[in-house]
Image: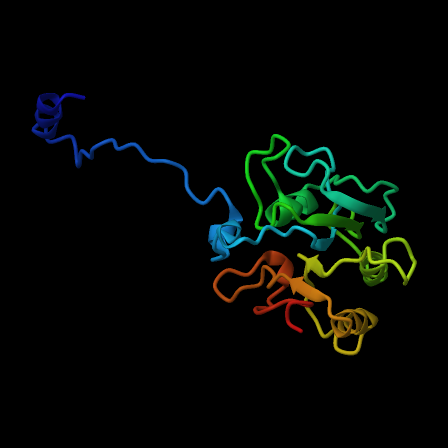
Length: 212
């Protein structure tokens, strides 16, 4: 719209405000910036040689960002497949170790890390304590041989629950993993004080296991 036409429209009394139409570009395509994580690759860190266990809804091993990045996988959700039928696990895996090397659009925080797909949640996003413990044990020792070094050094748990889990078998399993030197990364949950999810049922704060 030419400037003179915009001025003429403004004089009609029917236009409240005219703003310039500016071009914008999309930002924050990668979760790295949202998590306030610098570009570690510039510092020489890429995740190379690090195995990360992902306890979630499974991982789409054929996703362009994740091709060839999974070193071991097993289903504990009861669905009979390690494939991600929900989408959450693949999303999380992409944030962790997505890569452009096989045609993916974006790099994750550690694009050269390898993933252990320990599926504990079904396509509805539900999982049990027992399935999570089994998935954790698998992530720590995929081949079941204590003499081989194939377990995760980091385990991601992007799930949560409200209530008191102190002294439960899951807390014990997590504590034991930490005692072995494994880094457990857990989400804060969706029960923030400003806008808690309806699933929080009135609870506001960190969810378990992030609250540990």
